[in-house]
Structure formats: C-alpha cells, structure tokens
Image (cartoon, rainbow, N blue to C red):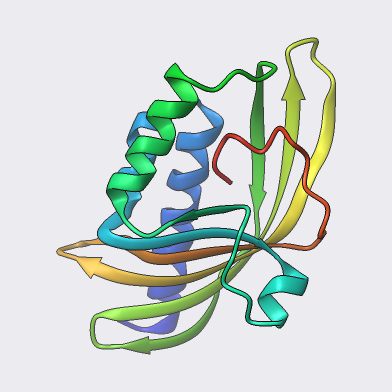
Length: 157
C-alpha cells in the first residue's frame, strides 16, 4: 500500500473513532482496538520524560470495555459530550503488518447547558495493525499538550 492510500486509511480510522465517541456510541469504542492493546492518556511532559503513568491507562480491550461500563453504571459526573477535530495523520513508519502514525487533535467539551469550551489539544501516537482489510489500534498514546487535566476526563479521547 502506498503512503497516500495508507494516510487515507488511517485518516478514515481516526474519523470513525472520533465519530463513535462524539456520538456517544461508547460501547463500540473498544472495537477499534486489538485484544492486547495499550491505551494511555498522558501529558506531553510525562511523555517526553518517558514516564509510563497516565491519566487513563488500559493494557487490554477488556479494560476499555470495563471503563465504559463504569462510565455508564458507576461514575457520577456532570453530563457533557465531546466534539473532536482531527488533523491529517503523518505516517511515521510502515512495516508489513504495522503502521506508526501521529495525528493532531483538538477536543471541545459541550456541557449540559450548551456551553462549549476547548477541552484538550494534543496528538495521537499510534501503532496500528491490519486486521484483515481493516485497521485496529494496537497502541494509542494520547499525548495532551497541557499538564493540567480537568476532573471531568471520563469520556475517552
């Protein structure tokens, strides 16, 4: 697959991914990941220092499913939703069955009363694998530009 086709496929994966989150179809969100995936939301400072701890850390699709279950059933938080704007992915490398990509994003948070504010900016650092004709995230590190996190970070980015 040439780089243009690959860029388009990764861009389409990102568009579908954020659409699932923005449309509150969160039960489908873990399906974008491999069974033994890594998903981590961290700050750019922690990422630069190579510190593995994140604000949100999961090392399997099962943990992602549990996170959504907890969000729906156990967590108490002010009602809100997201709107993502995702940039064009940069393909950082490709091997036979794996792609590495970096994609910038901004996420706006829309509160119950309609107030809309910029919530977080950053980039997705991805290791993506081919699953038949589809792509799945084997690793998604969400690197947030700010080191300050709002306590309302309950919905995946």
